[in-house]
Amino acid sequence: MQKPSVAELRPVVHPPGVKDRRSGEHWAGRLYMREISLRIDRHLVNTRVTPNQLTYLMTLFGVLAAPALLVPGIPGAVLGVLMVQLYLLLDCVDGEIARWKKQYSLAGVYLDRVGAYLCDAAVLVGFGLRAADLWGSGRIDWLWAFLGTLAALGAILIKAETDLVGVARHQAGKPPVQESASEPRSSGMALARKAAAALKFHRLVLGVEASLLILVLAVLDTVRGDLFFSRLGVAVLAGIALLQTLLHLVSILASSRLK
Image 1: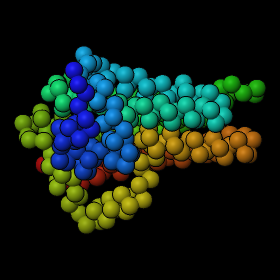
Image 2 (image 1 turned 60 degrees about the vertical axis):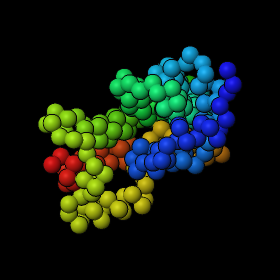
Image 3 (image 1 turned 30 degrees about the horizontal axis):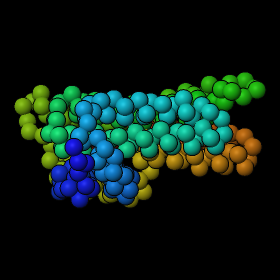
Image 4 (image 1 turned 45 degrees about the horizontal axis):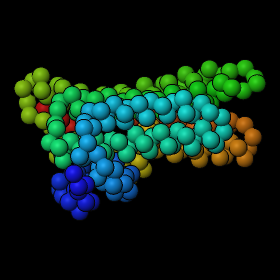
C-alpha cells in the first residue's frame, strides 16, 4: 500500500487548533517536532502499530531519561536529552496516528497523561542522583538525590492539580472547564499570573526544559571540574517546583475553574 505524502497527512493529523492549544502543545512541538513527526507518520499509518503501543514506547523513553542521566559527564546529559526528545517525538506521533486511523480511546488519553507524569519525574529524579555523584570516588551525598526527588514530586503535583480540576467537575456533573475560566478573578492574581507566564521559570521543571538545562550545567561542570553547577541546579529546581505547586494551587482556587 502506498504511503501517504506529508501534504496528505497534514490536514488530517494536524487539524486546526492542534498547534495553537494554550496548554496542550509544547513549544518544541510547534517549533520543530510536529514537522519531524509527520515524516515518521508516513511509515506507520499503513502498519499494524497502534497509537497505544506508541504511547507505551513513548513512556519507556521518558523513564529511560533517569538512568541515562546517571552516566557521568556530558555524555550522560546528552543521552538524557535524547531520551526526552524521543519521548516528545512519540508524544506527537501517537496522537497523529490515532487521528489518521480514527483509533481513539480513553485508555490512550489516560496512558498519555501517565507518560507525561513519569517523564518529568524521571528527569528530575535522575538529575538528583546525578548530582549525588553515585559513581564518584568519594561519599555519595544523598541530599541532592532528596532534592531531585522533591522537585519531581512538585512537578507531579502541578500536573495533578490541573488534572484534578477535570475530575472534580466531572464528579459534580459539570462540563469541562473553558479556557476563560482559568483567568484569576482578582486583578492582583491576574497580574501575578501574567508575570509568571512572562518569566516562564516554572517550565524549568518540565522534562524537555529540565533536560536541556542539565546539559548546559554538565558543560559548566566539566569546565569547573566538579558538580557545583548541577547541585546548584537541583536546588533551584526543587525550589521552583515547590513554589509553583503552591502558586498553581492558589491560581486554580482563585479562578472560576471550580465554579
